[in-house]
Length: 461
Figure (tube, rainbow, N blue to C red):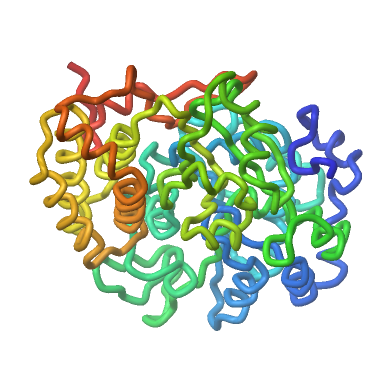
């Protein structure tokens, strides 16, 4: 398989992009065959959303396109903030033009009134590359009439949650709404329980929901290639249920953390070796986390295919293919505590069981990790895991429940050892793998995160 999403050399100009095998050909075909046929091509390809959920892209487009009403919008999600993930930034660094072309095609296919690309304001290098690509597309005449709005948003994890992302576009904090974007989209005037409707622009009818399509950067990066080469080409890679390639991030206890493009269905063990150069000599893999959103993958499942159905077969999830590797010297109590702390801090507080529960789980995990824990801490954690998801309006509380529960089930002896011996046997703690940068086999993690408070302010003392 030849990589097509991550070229060996970065593409830094529109002319250079047009000189590639598929550059500009996807949008030309879409305009030639029309919106309905374009959606049919994407549906036939089997492309699934690369933001973590894996929902069929063609079905999502068709659903939005079929919605009544004069206003539809498109939002491209590039606000990745989950630990262990760097794929969207890698794509924008190497070829932002394919992302913009996919965005133009998607907007055309669903009849979008306007398009928005959301990216964290702290991603300065990627923001510059994206802005340049949009401007060059517009100046070239390929999409002279396309209005693409780039939104530089906050660093909060929930900025990447699609319902919270719409709030940010409208100038509000990243607090998830109740209903998904295809039911209640951007600038909608129809009321929704739990937030205040605020019409923008012209006066609209009371029932207009403005259905909005939200796709991840990697999802849209595939679109132009599929239109140019055909759905059969895309299905020649990967598996029947998970066609194509995936951009995998491999960090943690590996020789050279990196991002790489692999064919769907490749065994996880092979991905760790190919992208991250494996673990250090003499060490073995103990556990792998696909971000912080899914149950832990233990050493006996390292041959699981990297695909949506593969991870489902071991009761986990592939997520955004951001793999955090821990070797046999790592402490799983410490890992559970760190990831739980991340989720508890990033919880927005709109759903009290999520904010309070994740905070309590984190506090009792810290007791166990530090050597002061008792069986009472385990009981409290178990109680909160049962109800932390009560009334949740986003997936964060489910992530907390699934991740912590899986570590408790997979490594009970480590929790027992911490409680019985009142100490952590691991020689050192691992950093929180929230990535600021990843290049040349070196990962730079966000050390400032440890100063972040539950109210999203920072302790600068």
